[in-house]
Length: 408
Ligand code: GTR
Image (cartoon, rainbow, N blue to C red; front, side, top):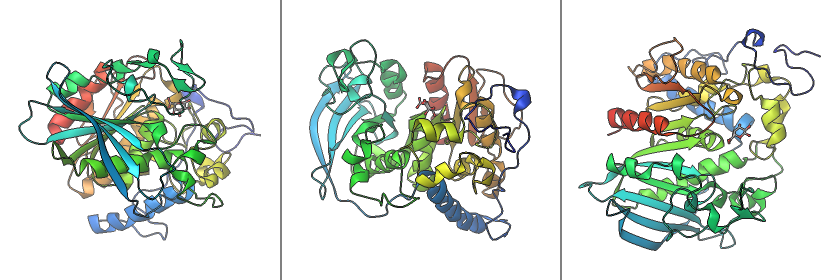
């Protein structure tokens, strides 16, 4: 049986632009009660309403309880990467929940920087040992998805995993451009599998009986905010300039973190796709039903009730992007990453324009889908690069320029 959006009873993916059909997005600037938003004060009210709607229907409620943290510096290298960086390994402990593992933060600060450095903050997929070849980074002992070529044994990292994703983290370039980098393994906050919550922060916060209990993406977003708490105590970084960054599922978390927490001065969502940057109502690539089926632990229970009726969702993802306004936002796609729906990510960014305009800013400033490998936009930027689902030097080159122009 075809629904209004051409989706059949089985989760079927569409890669045919001619089958996308038409859809109506919820109006960003009209509140649930029908009130039109015409100014910043009205938007700030609407903003709160939208955060609640995303919490109730998509990501679940983020517990507001203040959690006591203890920061322990495990190791400092005053001259890492041939003198380019001061490198610190810090563990964030949850004082009231000693059963939880700490979040292990890896921080690089440019040694040449005379003042506190603006900082990119992004979670990583396979442990801090994966982002660099430096052997004095502790090998993460946490649960990992099984990786290729002996990089894991029984869901634990092996020495072979070192530098496995180094290519996605051009640390030296970031440092040479004057930025610090803070990263941590997303599985420190919650291991990414359906029972992972039992050993993570969701085992002690939230309410598993509720349809709007937070999901793993919400937990990862919360973890980013806890790392921001730590950065606020770290004199070598400028905590008024934190750029939240994330790829794919971690990009979804980065967006949700930035939406809720204004301490993220800017947000970069690299191929965040379905339930991240891309419009859910656009039937192309991954669907709400597919993501809820493959990853039942990522979102709140209520999100699943929209599997076969996305048109009934009270929100769509352009509203998540708009929650970043008036702060700088970068949305990026890759041409071959059709699963993330590049065009749906672009259109979502286009839709934020009226909100940025309320603040006297230009968002993308264009509705024209750009050529590949061309970065467009003003306060909101977008590119679709050639290649696959990944993070490349090209991507970072755009993010660094964006940060130079809008964050520094
Ligand atoms: C895929 C998932 C995407 C994206 C991706 C990733 O399997 O369908 O939504 O999150 O994983 O994180 O790389």
